Length: 330
Image (cartoon, rainbow, N blue to C red):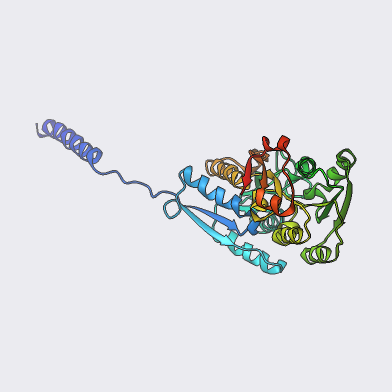
């Protein structure tokens, strides 16, 4: 008899326990905190990192909540840079973000040595295939993906717009460091069509560029096209100041150059590149592999003219160009 009474009692107790458990507070798993290693960028490239961080926040990654940034900086000493990057990699970061070809090459080499599968998202690396960063734009073949400003392609259009702005120009001057990222070969192919003389000088480092600017004798009709490589990126302000001092119009590669005083700039919006980089990082956090994400071209290219510099140089902006200008700096 007692056995018959025990079974229903146990069922009632089990059911009550189940109800209490279901009604009780659920135990939440702690949210994952994503750790992103950030390689410090040259000042001219910082807008890309700014855009990356702002867009990542919009995607739900909040610093101090589910996101932590870990900074590292390259130096002129290769051994010191490698040690810093090794420490960054060993700090258990989930992903590394980097801008600029020099820094991208350095962190790529470090991950190949210490953590070949650690994802890297790069930005502002022109000709990433020719620069040795990836195998192809469709499949990197490694742990990298990112966004290129395509400067090696845009250089010819930049030169054309520059000469439209300064139709009195007779000679296009450029000091360049990298064949791939500067697009110098494309410029050489285009120069006859542009109808001006090309004066070019290869510089191996910042000191050589400084020496070139200090000794070059400009002549009437010269205009200077800032090269899109690491050496010129490091010396942006020096190039612009040289142009203003010698009354030589200078064309930059992005809005930051125009804001610093170049007559014009034409190229990718670096902040927008940062937005694209953030969306790639989000896809990686959600399970995609870098090699599955093709290298993206710039989503936004803009023409910017500095009206103050035009006035200082006595350059009249042709009416035919005004409609195609994305922004005037006044």
